[in-house]
Image (cartoon, rainbow, N blue to C red):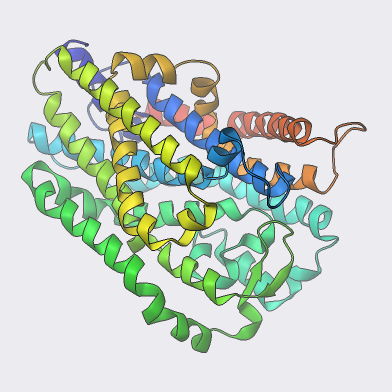
Amino acid sequence: MVKRREVSAVIRYSPVTRHLGTPQIQAVRNQALDGIRGFAILWVFAFHAVALLGATPSGTRLGWGVALAQQGMLGVQLFFVLSGFLLAVPWMSAARDGRAYPSIGRFFARRVSRILPAYWLHLALLFGLLLPLLRGGYGILGSDVGQLNLLLHPLLLHFLHPGSSSSLGLNMALWSLSIEAQFYLLLPLLAPLFVRDRVLVALPVALLISLVWKGLAADLLVDWVYLGVAPSCLVFFDPVSGQAGPFPPELMRLFLERQLPGEIAAFALGMAAANLCTRISTAAPPIWLGWVLDATAILGMVMMALILIELPLATVVSGAGWRFLGMPVFLLVCTLLVMAAALRAPLVERVLTAVPLMPIGVISYSLFLWHEPMLRLVATGWLVPEGCTGWPCRALLALALALAVATLSWLLTERASIATGRRGH
């Protein structure tokens, strides 16, 4: 394990806390946290690759690799836990040290400069260039649902309305960015509720809100949505074909369950982990702590993998047992992994800083933006060389294209905002 000063440096450093401009110990970037980002985005990519490129014929038994890839949408929940952790650290450190909380204005300014340039560039190219390639023209932009998407997407409000929740079938992964943005808006109010011993009340309340929302929201709100929203805007785009149709009731229920109150458990566990890690950093931790974190995080990940291999996708998407038991346990395992990485537990750090996880984690935000559109281009035959017909070839081609575009996006937008945040430190 690392010494007290080194542990404190790990806890206090992250790209997010640097953006906030809070007092910190100078430290190298925690590459293990980048490794978590890399793992999460590769898992999400695998999920979309299986769905869009047809990894296995319908009705066949899945191999363990494909079975795990099919559950890759859970990588988004890992991102949520990590966001809750990193964004809450400055509040937890301030409370521990008796300092004022971070400036709310500066926090929002840094979040805007970090997130929006890459996102707006993505939207401009998505609607301006890729739309005609994937849909044969711009006609849909003139419809009610098209105008709705053009209005809400730039504001990151698209997942608050069912008609824009599937992003015209061009990039359905964008739903989670809307949830993240809503969490950013609430963070200055939520984080103080998780400092010191307040977390003992805030965390159970957040978990309860999440479970109650997932259990009751759909039954209470689904009829209200169908009655209150114009039919011309109640359009859903099929996740695989991207074709438009009436919004199915079962997917409307899923849309309602995934609103921020239903996802708040992931962010809350991340904030609670930030509280615990800042407490640990106030004293030299015992040498065995790193190995305990290693054992619990790795054992938890292995057990979840074995469970997920056996679970059908439909169970993970909408099964009551998974919603009320499986998902909370999965989020707890994600939290243990984040803590192990933040405190640099030796085995977890070694795995997460390996190639390709760590370098991919650096560009994970841009890769998250671009991976699904690249998969859709490959799935429809664009950019596919002759002879590249099998699923592995097409998946690797899409990954290579996504990495190339994401790297360019990172260079053009993200690198500058990260450098600005560091200079402001």
